[in-house]
Amino acid sequence: MMDTRPKASSAARKRALSGCNIVVTRPEKQAKELADLIRAEGGCTILFPALEILETDDLRPLHQLIGRLEQFDLAIFISANAANRAMSEIIARRTLPDTLRFVAIGSGSRKALQRFGVKEVICPASRFDSEALLELPQLRDVAGKRIVIFRGQDGRELLGETLAKRGARVEYVECYRRAKPDADPAPLKRLWADKKLHAITVTSSEGLRNLFEMMDETGRELLKKTPLFVPHLRIAEAAREMSFAKVILTGAGDAGLVKGLIEWFGAEAG
Image (cartoon, rainbow, N blue to C red; front, top):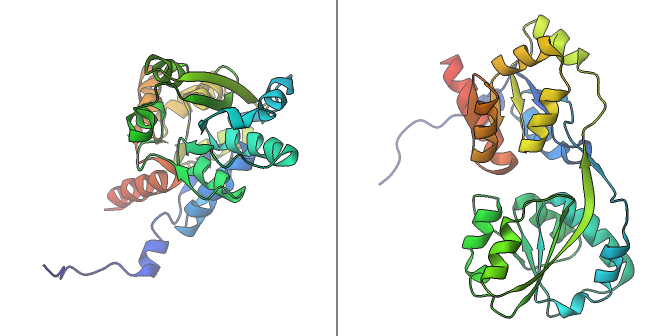
């Protein structure tokens, strides 16, 4: 059936977030894509990283594993940071084994792998988490397979534990660590005072906790009243436990966040 409803013009869409000041809390080097998407819709971005990505204290385990990478059937990258850090080290030291298959937890890690020349990447279509990875057919029948999981320090154990129960031989290798930035929240407080801070985006539970801890008591109360946009149910649940008043669960990834922002502010304008 032909859709006869009037279409919004491209120019109208570009104004979808006009006048909105939106905080992006991604780590500094991962914030650009989301910030660009928000600006493309007319919004203004305030970059305030709530996570800092650092090298691990000891890269020797990573380097040792790279030397025997051909022993593995699957390599899983648990984040874009894991893909960027690990692949930089791998490409500097060796060629990629022809038999190794690459798995990405989401679109960001898939794009990172592709930038390093990996053409075929197994990746969930929508939800980007360990649970979605475990639903993929390529990770269901893994008995006897050797799997390496590239991740940050102190990552979740669900993925490796489940794959091991399915009969895989799993190894973890940590290629970065996360830290709480030492940042001054005064610019955010000034925007709140002028009623010019309209939304905050957060993409991890750890980033949410860090953001909360980086504020003083007054800042925390203002933070909890500001619309918070998150792309995962686990982050939304953490925010509600912390008494955030307006938690908006969006689709996955940067595109999902921006779509959620557009829908929210479009409804507010309406």
